[in-house]
Length: 93
Image (cartoon, helix red, strand yellow):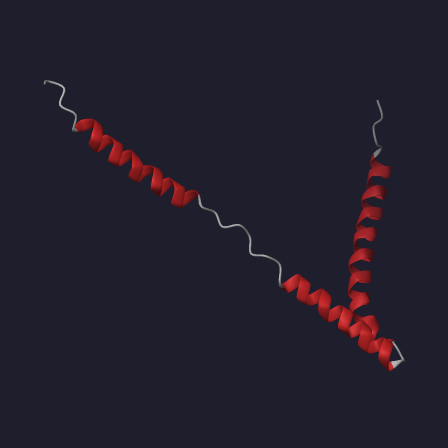
């Protein structure tokens, strides 16, 4: 059985947090790097790519609407109608 020692667990947690921080900083730095491109066509192309990426993030499809309440209301209505039909049956005829 392989058990992680407390010191190595702390070290592992520290490495994971550093990696997470580095990834978040690098994504933020990617947004800012267009500013430092000297050639105008390359800089404008960079801005166009960033704009397209941001537009794609903004235009994500709406989350699927939860229809649980609607279906529950419909089931209640159908149950009430069925109950009226069942209670309207003449059993003594």
